[in-house]
Image 1: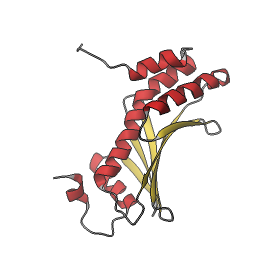
Image 2: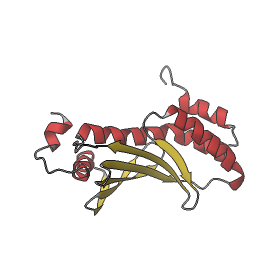
Image 3: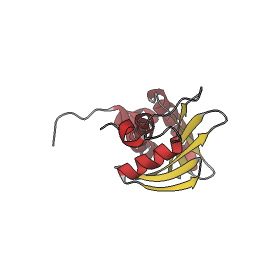
Image 4: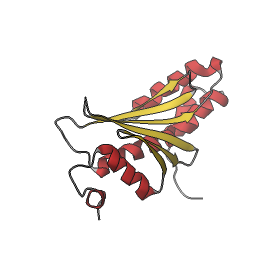
Length: 167
């Protein structure tokens, strides 16, 4: 049974209702912050990521923000920003930014549902999957640049390298 068949039982499910059903399905911790917003914790290989999805009916956009804490040394910020640019060049869905004040690495993604379109559970699941996969993929590069004193180019090689063979 597809995700759509499991979760779409009526036309009055809004995108945040679908996200809540997906969180329950995946057994993720979540909190329905408001009618139009949900916050979740998703465990990855490197760390637990905080995800917030919010529905903005005025522009018919479902927004996703995936964050994790990061407090890089001040002198490494130029290299971190260069690494962020490199990561964003490789992300077709969403983009990274660094919020210095709360010391958070942020991955943002938006799904436009203009014209009263309905989000399919598969679309929302794909959004969440893209956020976690990209955070997992580039986390080591961000760490190497900030604390391993690696150049952005060297650090990005870790993110784009494919593992071959088996251990």
